[in-house]
Image (cartoon, rainbow, N blue to C red):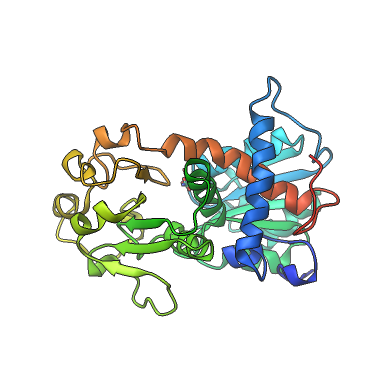
Length: 326
Ligand code: CP
């Protein structure tokens, strides 16, 4: 059983594996998700935050890596669209008895599902799943590769505060090397016309930045006064196989956003983080609770953005560039 991965040029999006799947005009694809998200934010604010848009559809969460935000917000999004949900927990599944990924996908699909939300520690697994599956596949984070719905909710959060992302100066600070969030965000922010600067020690940058339309700096104190958004990344110690920094304390001293450093930011600048945060490492506890910090907004918007993505993949009648009736 195989099917092509998404090809938006041939009609509606079939999978969301990377930001590039949003269409040949990525900015237009993101714009469509943003517009639809506005509708689902309104739905989420109702007394009964539920619409029948995906009644009869089934969404399964297939998480081979830990998650709080992504997993719960996809589940909430599916339920608010009246879809049925199935949760797959690797630790209590037959994967533990040696069942292969392919057999796991075929088993789940035999039960009748319409969308598979996949997180895996290895880059490329969602694309592989999409080649085996007949259901729509959504990448909920694969290794160092991409986390497209995180980038969409980040775009929505910036747009909500500033109205537009074009021309905004965004610093992405920290462990870029291991970050799927950074890869999806660079693709999305630059497609929308933002000016992106990566700020990290050289050892925490990707081995090659060829094709990345970004500036690079190792001097966070010089960059902070120039930005509209300071986007902090978690130090992904679970993906580090070698010592890339002298110590966490040294990293925190040189790159962490402490209260003194946060004063360098312009008054209007947003502080963002995909979560989970390591308070005291990349962000001080007091800065995490700063009025310009929009981390809770990011999480809140994640539900409506994921409703929009599920609706675009599974809903009836809308295509890229079309009107949605939610
Ligand atoms: N931002 C994010 O992906 O968080 P979780 O790991 O909690 O899903």
